[in-house]
Length: 121
Image 1 (cartoon, rainbow, N blue to C red):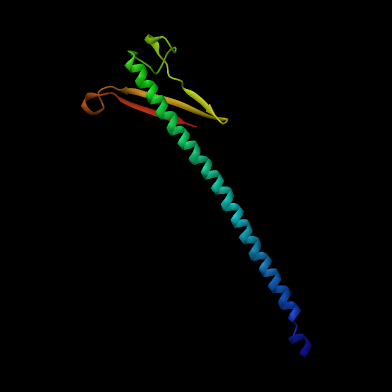
Image 2 (spheres, rainbow, N blue to C red):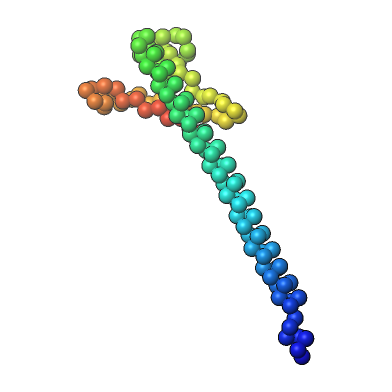
């Protein structure tokens, strides 16, 4: 009876099993955080690219307006009566769709045209 009460090998086995379970949970958690961090960083990079593309599209729109194009958002590039802005860009295998809405004539401050540039990916 005394030998059964002093069975230390059972306690050691139970401790090893508990440590294995805890370490497995910690390892899985670390891997999960790493994968989600990688996905969120890709999303941030895509958002920065979209912001820069939108800025470039707005500058292209302004340049065409300065050159006398009446409607830079549709038509054929180079023909000033129907100027056009590139409406789709591919960077690193990701497509970015550009849309410019300049229908808000007189809606901006001091009766200026409100121009909305949207980039979706």
